[in-house]
Amino acid sequence: MPAPANLSHGRAYLAIPGPSVVPDRIQRAMHRTAPNIYEGELHALTGSLWPDLRALACTEQNVACYIGNGHALWEAVNTNLFSRGDKVLVLASGVFGLGWANVAKAMGVDVEVMDFGRSAAPDMGRVEARLRADGAGEIVAVLTTHVDTATSARTDIAALRAALDRAGHPALLAVDCIASLGCDEFRMDAWGVDVAFAASQKGLMLPPGVGFVWFSEKARAVGRKAGLRTPYWDWAPRADGPEFWQYWHGTAPTHHLYGLREALSMIVHEEGLANVWARHEVLARTVWAAFDAWGQGHGRIALNIADPASRARAVTSARLGAPDGQALRQWCETRAGVTLGIGLGMATPEDPESAGFLRVAHMGHVNAHMTLGVLAVMEAGMQALGIPHGKGALEAATAVVAQAAGA
Ligand SMILES: *Cc1c(COP(=O)(O)O)cnc(C)c1O
Image (cartoon, rainbow, N blue to C red; front, side, top):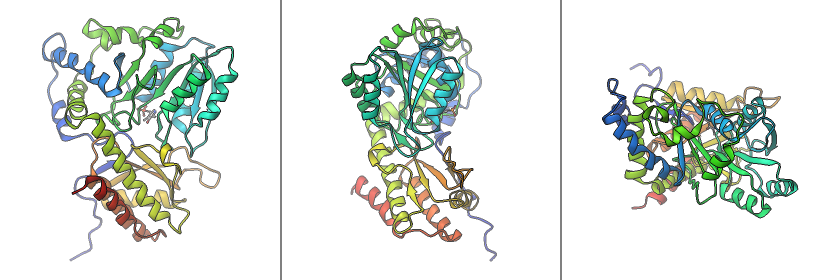
């Protein structure tokens, strides 16, 4: 018998932090001809989405939807909140925080970036000190990522709220939840968040193309003065309707809505949000356990975020050293049918392509066998490629799953 050319044939697994795996039942729900957009089923279905979208963000406030990806949402939020020259404070811990800052700058907003580097979450002591120094209250809003998908750093949003409150600062709190909603615990109202947003292709398990912005009454009031607002991006008619076309400012993303109905049923009504968070937590810890073992005695291999409290539950960024990160990714894809995320924004003079990093997603429609499968494939790849690594990673990973799942 000849040796197989590779072992990738079978069901492929895209283990990258978006787009994430689209469940079969969501695909089936979207597989239909064009529905009537004037009346009937689509209107009833759309009406059922709003309460579940609120439940997803743990809010009773406003939600506006957009046809667009995550980059569109940065612009949507900036447009609805700011005027040219307004001052905002951006807390960045990776390329996504910096990306939002750059979009705001390009729109004429006066952006101050507090950059916490590429391997740490924002330090609330420093943030509080900065807010206290703004006695005149010039800062209109604090913008941050809940999870920066590039570094997998997670901002403690409740602690950020507490820092704003201790400083007595009235700034709005706006949070990019694109990589975290439906994965990491997030409570918009309890944490005093004014604006949060998410895109369809991450925790929501849909194809890319639809985005959601939740906003508080305070944000609505502050935003009434926003000089950057334009008719297309205006969130008020999108949130309030009442005409069906107003929710989308034009034709609805018809097929996405059928998929979204299914996704929200799965998350909010069937598994339940708390269980969804708990599943992501366990799968994240499974991945961390494997990396900790691989790094034992092999310091080249390490999780990017050392402090577990500051790690995302939806994606893990890790260092293997160049060129091993890239080589292992390629091996996993071509030999074993699993695609890992590229290193993003981790370039150094010695590693201009971020080839020493990779990311393992555990985001959305993912379960224990998928995550354990990815880790076992990575271990096989390290063996095949001769990448030195510590032993016992799979034992450590399976122990996390065994303990969490119980008897
Ligand atoms: C994915 C992501 C974005 C960008 O979304 P696109 O759909 O690629 O435009 C922005 N912010 C965060 C935190 C993300 O994870």
